[in-house]
Image 1 (tube, each protein chain N blue to C red):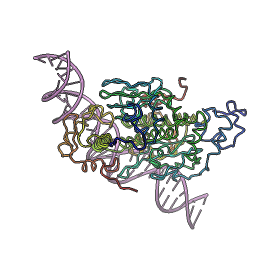
Image 2 (cartoon, helix red, strand yellow):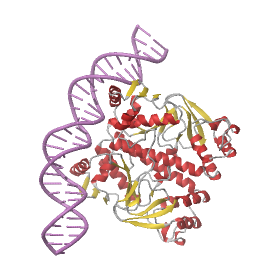
Image 3 (cartoon, chains in turn orange, brown, purple, red):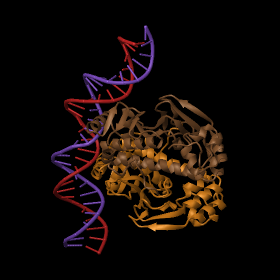
Length: 256
Length: 256
DNA sequence: CGTTGAGTTGACTGATCTCAAATACGGTGG
DNA sequence: CCACCGTATTTGAGATCAGTCAACTCAACG
């Protein structure tokens, strides 16, 4: 995760601060974009929006104009049923792209809401498409990002369709653990930015059930829970509760 | 849905039979591709594979080489939990594209299985990407198709996370009704190609629950059920059971 | 220092699952 | 064309996981 001073693939020093450690790095850097391409991408960005907790990145029905890369903070995307019930389809951390739902119908299909003070880069979609055409590899990278979202959704479907409450929460916590680690934070000690209600709406559980599960996991010595601060005390057993398969523990994974 | 002899937007007569009424038409025709582009697309297609019921279009772990457009028949895509439990992430009819899950990691993330005698066109992905670069609008069209899959998944998530068993089955049946209609078949009288078990694995329910729901819907006069043949007798009430919002009734949809 | 929202915990309820058995169906071989 | 077999489906009865309703605690905030 550490960058030594002399960048190897890309001369990071030469581009604006915006992209070099921003949310888009997952989108850009794996490409091996050269400095020119990177700064082209950089110049796409319309503006950086700062959002307070609870503010919308976009809302259902708004015309799609841009995608949004989370630069800092976190967000949830919410589907709303006719009855008013909410299903959270994803929690999104720094480095992730929001808004792909809107491409299909040229307007957003879900709400995206900041879970805390959050900063997003607004990337006009038409310009991004143009750039994807002009820059070799960017089209492929976008396909991959979209595909990754589909894969994530199908894992979420498996969770909601086949797992019991314990497994769901365990999988969810391990996923956070893994993603925080990838962002350079502790994988075993973190503060969640969402409420029990949000977790329930993501996991397909009542908030009381989520709360009870936290208590149970704490009693069993898997976690230390203090409100939204979570410490994973026994990741091996937590993974066992998760039913193995779903998410790999960040130690090592069998190759094949 | 009917094609009169003289095509209007595209001179269909001038291209090979392969694409003109094939599964890819959703992918191609909305573009207003000209005849040259269409035949370029046509020439991409590696081969048409005929599959018997139960055969794999692709399997988890196989390297991604192609996407597959369903030309006739139907398929399911299945996620497998570590415990061996199956979650079906989608049922796919003619005109739909399979395999997008595999782009993310260059290998397939789920199984795709024919539900009946099925024919798919194999489209080498690298060539498709090249064509997407060369043909104006195809890139955008692919983005849209991928986005549509994400939207569908999030509706599925809402179903599994927030709906009760009745609502789930009703939504599912209305979705089939709508899709059959779009393919030119009856929207109120059709034969399902999947088992009760498959429906349960899609809906996050036990097969017995699905069976009981069919019986109940029949008792209530919503459906006539004869094994896998389903007649929708009261689509208005069925939509009411579905909780409205989820899927539009196939009469007419508001334009924009 | 009262108000408000978030979280925890308990008691009870019920929708759905599981287990089990009966029945119908579809395909196959004689 | 029919009998037979295995699979799919239906139906019943009982068990259970998670939801609902409700009360209480706690922390943040004006």
